[in-house]
Image (cartoon, rainbow, N blue to C red; front, side, top):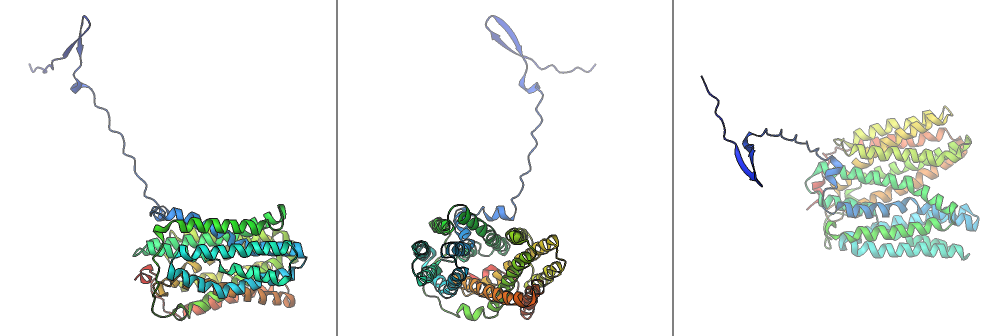
Length: 431
């Protein structure tokens, strides 16, 4: 008969007792623990895994919020203290004109001497201009002092441009990650211009008329100091840049940004007037915020997708901009709000792709200057679109002027379709 081998047991003595101990080899082995699958980070997770990016992004977001606060804060403060919206509007318009002249020069200094060396003193000048405006308004100083004070805020550095320049410096040779970064920056722009006016209006009305301007100045200074404190991610300065001026390399893109600004300005003024004419003026802020929220969400989503060509994005925008015109004809709030939401969602891919074109064609070492020129073109377009829409509203009512943003989007499509565009890549701007 076959016999089963007997493994001798181990013996041990505990006190005066002989104990048989089981052989450890005979113990049943435990089942191995299941290995948990590690989920790979998404596009934004990989983006902010780059060392130093979270630090400068924190400062970037803090400094960006005042960009949407200063205009409405100045209007509410001046109108509240001086009783004149005409004076308030003229002061803000003069400040925008000064920014169009000063901002590109500030950006050029940033490119040549470094972000920290230029942005901090430029911000201090802008903050002093804001404080001077508060004092002049409060003390009933002559009107010209309001213009001079607000014009001093034109030295405010283009924080969005500096942040985009950092991403371009960090993501050399990584076009997919660069696309995600540009999408995030566009979403940050929309978030600032969505929340900024709301915060400013609340502070000026709930606290005191100067509260919005003071809070904006504090946030701007704090954000720039935090942003520039992270020197490891700062692109190196280019003190001796040679080559074509960005004005020459961007000669076909700047008209495109101007037309897009015209679209933004005319759409906003027309929407405010249309809602006011239907007794819904109090909902102007939330409805426009909904449009900005759509652009913000679409920008973040676009950063996770493969980038599209600029003509494709412009075609989608041209189609979307016809929706508010059609919705306004119904005289109902809900269709108009939904149409503005969809129109806002169509703007983000256009701005992300167009800004990437700025990166691709701007000469190395002058990236911040090139992006500031693009932003200046947008502001000029907003001013032109607002003025044109205002005149059209006075003569045609509040529905027909919705044709202006639709026409501007179509013109932008024609401008973009005329160019033979190469694939977007951030590597062309890196020497």
